[in-house]
Amino acid sequence: MCITKRGDEMIIEIDVSSETPIYTQLVYQIKLGLIQGKIKPGDSLPSVRSLAGDIGINLHTVNKAYKVLVGEGIVEQVKKGYQISSETPPKISDDYLSVFKEQLFDLMIDAHVFNIDVDHLLEDMQGKLKGDGTDD
Image (cartoon, rainbow, N blue to C red; front, side, top):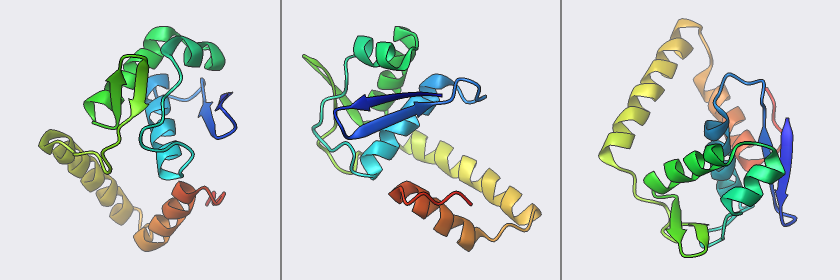
């Protein structure tokens, strides 16, 4: 696991042994930082080279993550690099919303098949999003 700090605020954790691609982990770590208020709309992101060096990953991986975030409207490319979009919340495309709904539906099927208490699960997930350290 690699950790980097952006100032004293943002910590990005990447699990190199995870099956989740590193660029996807980076995308979600940036989104989580935004949700938790560790980064704010209008904040500049570290340069591709700087973040890649801090985390110890390939420049292309960081660039791919930033491009995904640009495509989602969460990040804007500016003259000096990348920054969090000042538009809050970012507009979601119909295509992305459709994919999101399909993925959520698949997860809901599993929740029902395995008799998972969805309300309890949502409470746990809300705790994690807020960064209160909830693990189960």
